[in-house]
Length: 626
Image (cartoon, rainbow, N blue to C red; front, side, top):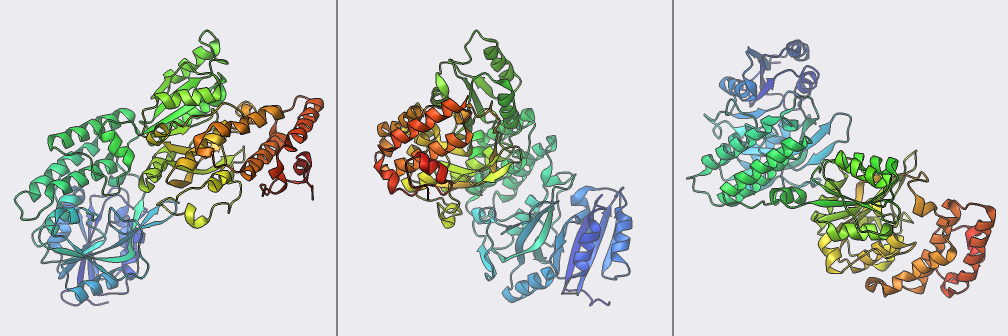
């Protein structure tokens, strides 16, 4: 294949120890539908066989030129490539990434059609073995619009500039725009200063609404996944950006720096799971912001919990009641210790009637708390409902989660749930769960279509009704609540058999917005020692009294007889199927009580019951079993 002189496009590909990836990168470039390009490959002192992989992948293709040099880092390699380009249009492709076959043809056509100085495109994030996600390339917008025309983005304000991914890749540049620009050598996160300098030379950027650049994620050694002390170099980069922009005739610098500092500190610090290192990083971020007179600004899709950390607030409180049984509690505390939101406040609240201060069980609670960071033990609670209320009274978090001992959350649950509630400005979030040893998924709804899918899937949330609340499973471990909302309406867990269900119903009834949490559902333990309330052989009278507790709850004043009938039938079904009755006689007495109480509930004859209420339970309720 022959090249024009010069080619239309020069691409710079820096290579360092990516032997497992570089072949696919080169193959994606060779597959381009636009063929008039050159690739300057810089082997930056690789020691893992990358050079051999390069030779095999390139073959005899004359468009590729390999330059060998001692290791100089990513900036040094890119700068070497810039010294050898010859085309009027230049781009960068990282050697562990790939591009779509029409990447160059689409990008070049838009550049020529618009006359722009540079063009960017959407991105496919490709984690190893994980689900591919697409992104616009804008910090404040995730969703790509299928078929949307290229979009012209004004850059006349620095706040417009910081919306865009500063990556050198996913862009093509006219050589005139970046003439003389070089990447800062000797520092990480070098793309930022290069992007700002290029942006300072033009007043707009054109963006293609297609994910043409395929970025690999999760590779060992990847800079963007770095969590060692090198992340502290981010503050040098922020200082560099502030210095670059000073004196330029472009407004919005302070607001842009405030936003990008919040965004970049989150990108670096949000990945760190070493609690001490993260605490040091957060303190330095706080100091940097304070030195510049900035408050955190979450405009660029930064989760609210990172803003809380930068302001010294507590993002989430988790309340865990305990009866002193240690094995389930240890499982729950261990799962909380693995949360990516490692600053969560965890309040362990013993039921004083079961784990008194003088008992060995109570001492074991303090011992468990001592080995799990962030855990405090509270006293002064009677019963599970009292323990939850005690935890709520003492909580400091923006959001509150109530877990049962034995239940486990996946590592990203608290961070994801808090972000979902924040984006939707919701007071209540509820989601699905995984039940039993085989972790069967349960949607968290008693009927899968009980709430329309379009409402559940809306990231902006929805306005809940009491009918919605009746559909939601009452288990507390798959819910998150805005603490200020709970306090404003003085919401508390009532005493009785239906405590967590009525609390959830009351909260939804008074909430102006709820949101479904489709990801990171809790793993619900179903072992007898974990589900004592669920399996407890309560009398039918106790269940009835628990249901009637709703009469004292202001948010449930509108509960209809049909709602009560449905809840009653559900309670009886659960006890019949899951309660550990000690003997046949006790079970028979329970069933007799159910029938005697059910005849007092006229609405049972007309109420639409849950679909899983079968003939046997219907018969116990005095209904036609057909």
